[in-house]
Length: 292
Image 1 (cartoon, rainbow, N blue to C red):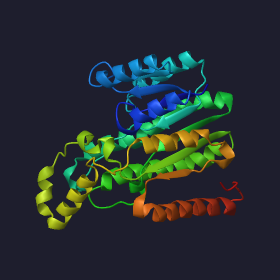
Image 2 (cartoon, one colour; image 1 turned 30 degrees about the horizontal axis):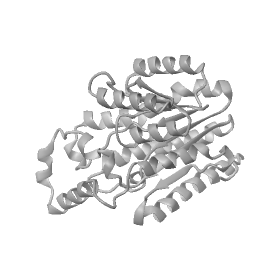
Image 3 (spheres, one colour; image 1 turned 120 degrees about the vertical axis):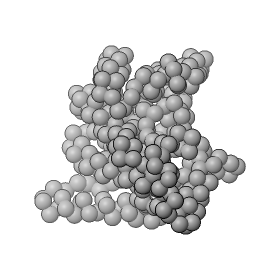
């Protein structure tokens, strides 16, 4: 049985992914902040759901921005699995739809702490266990917005672009030691609750400096995240993650796009161009990696 650590399990992609993977027969350690307070309802639901269905799902308290919290959670999971950590899924994240100027520097820093530094903290916490067994898989949940820094999503896109760059670098670094890493690039999924969970801007009055055009873009983006019929559901991303886990390492793609819409082909070209740039640099240095 594979043991999977999943961050950000309290809502959106995380909650449904925890259930999908548990149904596949994996032991899922569904981590979240505040499982005994703010997220107690969902933590209890997941635990009781797993118990009633005789599935292996364990809720673990973990805050990706807190070094001690990560260390304590990893120690708890390692003890429960005898150090066998097969898959880490970095799903925890925070978004924002609004002008860059409306966020304070502290809020921008917080978004990077959650979306980038937190993911890297989890990777560094899991890698020693994977190195010990010379195998493992890390999946980072990104977004097609990482390739498309449009107005009103600049800071969020920047954090995800940083996560992608970090992941690609890890991909090449870890290739020689038997550990895989992959990216999931979802399109727009209203059921992630990105609007309800996004930051409250510290400087909303900055919007007054901008014209109607920026306001229209923001409204269109917000409307695209309103749930409704015929809009994609989070379970599609959960299935994509499940599929990546099931693919043998030599055949696993670095990127998986989920519902990219009219932007998908452009994102696919961008991904391929990035891969070719890195490969060409490595070839110049005399290092050659097998293509996917």
